[in-house]
Image 1 (cartoon, helix red, strand yellow):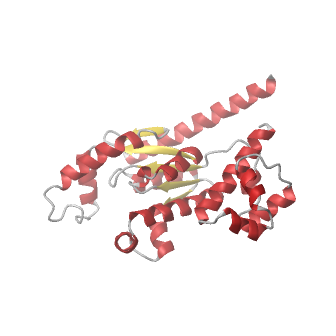
Image 2 (cartoon, one colour):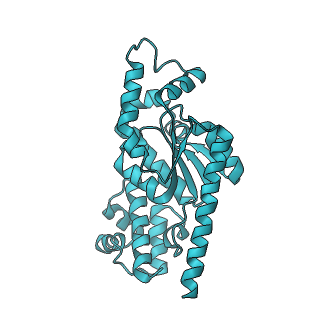
Length: 259
């Protein structure tokens, strides 16, 4: 990776962490002892910062310096499973995590734990915009850990452009696709009848949501049709795709070295 690319990568990581924490440039400048002007240049990939000064920035952002200054190509060590409820994100995610020897995390459960609120309470008290901000913040913290994990993502996250771009850039995204009928049956099979209770238009609403979000879900790197494959097979297909990508990346690097 050339010098400009390294600086650009550091700048992206600094800005992503700062914005996820809701801090201004001035606030980080005060915490780090570095001028807002230089921090602005740093985030733009123009600031040729020393390791010592970068350590000050990392401390101000409360992250390890290595998470900001890695000069390797960014590896997608996190697999993000997206799709509507009933797509199989939990069951397939757990199976995939076992195959990969990685942690499995449900982002919605993490949000509930972090806020000490159920999702219903959170939406009622603070609204969807707050939910999306918390999701972005917690995703950034997970990505900063730089370790393999499988994350089940809430179905509406793809409608938040910043968070969806973050996932596509930093994770291996997989759309677990299912028909409206299968989404419906699986949610009912989980014992949750709340989305359908006393609502004759529930299926029509489900179809509408799936239709609107499908173009966004289709931007994922990989799609698994869970209408036709089971949990174990789906997990194996994702794991195989990851192995193929790793092999292709290795061959590409070897080719570049041999030139």
